[in-house]
Every structure is written in C-alpha cells, then in structure tokens.
Length: 481
Image (cartoon, rainbow, N blue to C red; front, side, top):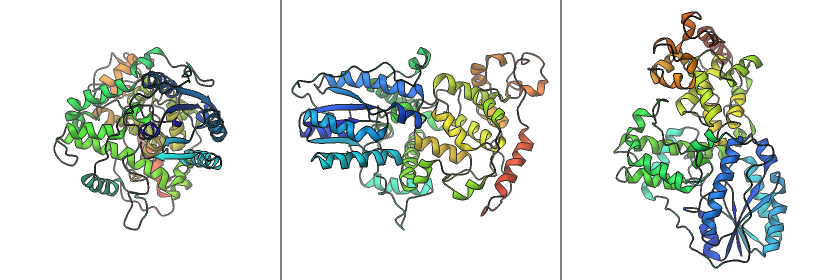
C-alpha cells in the first residue's frame, strides 16, 4: 500500500507525488491538520478555510478513483513523524510520497519524517512539484544561488528552451479498498470562519482554478502587461490563491500561457511574456528561501539593513492596519485586503512602501499582517515582496526610491474608481479631489474621512536619512515615483 501525504498540492491533475504513488500500487491519501503550526506561521483564517474547502472538493474527486482521503491531526509539525508512522503501521504502508515544500520548518519536518519512516523500513519519496526547477539547479557560474532576478530568469529561459517541464498524467481508477474517507471538518480551532462574501470570491476546486486559467489565457492575457497595474480593472489572473494552495500547478500555468502565445516565452504577445515572467518571480523567491534560509527566520536578505532604526509607532501601525491613514489609495487597498483576503499587486507595493518608508515601521510588521489576512499568503512571495519594497531584499528598490502614494493613486486609479468602491464615504468627490481630500480642508463630503497621519515630504526625508546612516550604503541622489 502507498500513502500520498497531501500538503500544498490540493489537486488530482498534474500532481507528481499522487501519480507516483498510484503507479506503484493501491494508494491512500492523508492530510494533516496542524493548527498550532499554522498559528505560528501566521496563516490567515480565510486561507485555512480555503484549504478545507479545497480538501472537500479533492476528496470527492479522489473518491471517484477509489482513493480514500484520511484526515489526521499533528497539532504541531513536531508531531508529524509519529502521526504518520502510526498510520503507516495501521495500514501496512510500504512507501510515503510527498511533494517538496520549502522553508526552514518544512525542510526540518520532512527530514524528521523521512528518518522516522526509514527506521521502520518505510521509504519516503519526495518530488519536485510546486516549482519548475529544483532549488540548487539554477545557480551562478560560481555555484551559488542567484541574488538578482534578471540573471536568474536568463538561466531559466535557457533551461526551458532545452526542455519544458512536462505535465504529469492524473492517476486512473483503482480497485476499491476496505477503507472509507474521513469527513473534512468545517473549521479548525483557533481560526475564525470567513464571511460568505469572501468565500464566494474564491470558490474551491480544480475546476474553478482551471476555469480561471482558461478564461485568463484565452483573452485577458493579451492585455495583462498594459492593464495589470490598474486596480479598478480585472487585469490579473486571480490565480494566486490557487497556486499557493497547489490547486493548480505552475506547470499547468506555463503550458496554458505558452499555448496562448504559439509556444513562445520570450517573444510574441507581450502580455503572455509578462505573465510568464511573474511565474518566474514566484519561482525566484522560493529559490531564495532555500539558498538564503535567513529570510525564513525573519531576517533581512541584506544583513546591513538589520541596523535600520525603525520607529516604534503603535498608533501609526494601527491606523495603517485599520485603513485610516487619511491617504485614500492606502486605505482603499487595506480595505480590499481586510474584506477579500487579497490585494492587487501594485497596491501591495504602494502600501508596503508607505509603511516602511513614510512611517519607517519595520517591514516584518507588514509581512506578518499580510500573512494573517491573505488567502494567497505564501512565505516566499510575501517575504520577497515586503523586502523588495522596504529596500532590505533581493533586487530591492533602491532606498531612495519611495513611491508617492498620491502620484501612484493619480497614475493607476486616475478616475478614482477603485478608491470610491472601497471608500464610499469619498464617493461625492470628483476625480481630482478623491486622491487627496486633505486639500479640501474637511469640506464637502469628506468630513468623516481622517486627515493624513503623516506628511509625505518630511517623512520621505526621514526615511532617506535613516537609510543613509546604514553601514556600506552609498547614496545616489533621489528618485521619487
């Protein structure tokens, strides 16, 4: 008997470990509920709920193949080896199959499980699945992990030209086993149930993920490059939550994008090329997690930035978290996050730069808050994005580049449609006034909207001074976008 241990790979199709297990003989699937570990990792309640909903869909599709889905609890990952061993003994399992996961805790957990099973004569197979390239296989000429995305991408392109990662065939139906699937719980202790509105935005299941991918690559991908920065437009694929939970694979995404672009990934439609680039950014940040484990441990990628004199400003932090900074684009973006479990990528950069530069608050506060609310929360991508915005990470924005939220707002939400959707209290303002109601001095329709909590110009100077004081920094003028 084979056991497939499901984690962030909640799908039947193109699932490497599932296909490998099923090819070897009768297969049973297991999923471990680990609420204490999830709390420690700041996993959002809406994300845990999304996992459960996807497990329910997956359980039904595996049921049609006669593959039972069992649910066990290992409150903390320390308990995973004992829990899996117990199950293996009960079911007389010969081998356990799992898809690789990355991050310090994930690697430790899998190593411990492998050792425990080996001692019992049970083999533990792990497979490359959530990435196109195995970490450690895309290296610089000096055999180190890339620190710069453009160089990493170049090598990825060379590799893709030579061989494209193939899709894995879904397993067929097996003989019925004398074992029933377990019911999937509706909730997990410690995690609140999200609103039905939020759930409706993110339907579970592979069919939904595939529908989104097909809809996007059939038409919208052509406009991706020109529309992806405008939060009021439906310019993005809305697949990030499905990728993070493994309801769809990057291979499936890559193949669909190539199909829409006559097999080209460096030329042809600029929208498809740009989107494939985003898939490679996702890849890059996971490789960073493995190559530079300090980013898994709440450390800055650029060690010299650990000396930054961040402000301890709980009131400013709370205003940012609660969408009452007095800067409409920031507050609208934060409301989108709080209500939908998701934020548009351009806005993620704007609000992160505002927190870390204008408020000079430690990026780790923002990273944690995002993880606690994002349905697509992913350690590598979230950390990479926050460190980019705060100028502490790989390929980071130069420290003197500080987005001006007002000019970003005017540029990417020029009609104020996004702002008015999320801040209906500003609906009465015209498209010029809506970006900065403070100019109206509390008059006409914006009386119940707060004044800005910070002066953008003086706070920018404060940030520049803090960064200039760091060791081994060279100042190079100003650049305000």
